[in-house]
Amino acid sequence: MSKIQVLPYDRAFECAEEETILAAALRQGLYVRYGCKHGGCGTCKSLLVDGDVEESGSTFALGPSERAEGWILACASQPSEDCVIDVSSMELTEEEFLAGDQIGSLLTEVETIQSLTPDIRSVRLRLVEPDAITFVAGQFVNVEIPGSEDVRAFSLANPPSEADRIDLIVKLLPGGRFSQLLAGTLRVGDRLRVYGPLGQLKIRLTYRRILMIAGGSGLAPLLSMLADLAHKGNTRPVTLFFGARRPEDLYCVEQIARIRDAMPVLEFIPSLSDAWPTDWSGETGLVTEVVARRLPSLEGYDAYLAGPPPMIDAAIPLLRARGVRARNIHFDAFLPTGGP
Image (cartoon, rainbow, N blue to C red):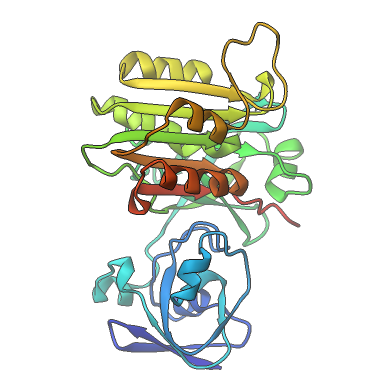
């Protein structure tokens, strides 16, 4: 058993052997911000002031330089001795910290399941109880696997103005539990328990131009953001790059066209990296290569990234080199979490 002291509140709690810091805090009625619970989103990033921890999960959301500075992910860290952590960066009041987990539990019903590509599905969940969800475009929810306490994290693809439902974009993963549900037993009318909203990916209100880069199922939060911007009458220039492998892997193109009709400042640039027809007039190559060709300078941009980790890994240094400040790069990495 280890003691975890939490700054700036000067409060402490006990963490059992092989228990993560986040799990221990929630178990004892305390609250620190969290999201995916598997080290992928970075929401629970905290500063380790004293003591030592062992990482127990993915650490994609924590770069080497941050790790060297002492940052940890509470959801993926098990203390090996008494520790002191500082959660000031979460901007939590002491009342919120002491109030316990306030993440909402929502009962939903499957309304539609549609194939978008050979390995990506659209799932629409109708809100049953409560009958609406309040969220910020870019956030995600945790969907409970029926018959278990396990969850999978998915971004909301619909905008906050369409609050009576939750639209998900799901990539089918070999052996993934939610993938197996979609391929087998999940049917229209089935009910699913959802928790959220979670995450802090959102459009920042600045004067800067907006750059969005998506790959795979990462288009989901960016669709929500774009539809929300259009709904609010946005006039800031927006450029969306969407990378796919083959023509059949491009999806929601008509939806993006409708958003562009409502928001003419949007420029949409799809690209294909593996194969394309002879009459393809669009961009080819990896999406980051396309960004490099099309935008030699990125000074004065806010960047929003969502997609697989290799895409994020390639995009961040490119954006930094072209003039985007580190604090103006915001991203969700879509980590494969569909194990047994």
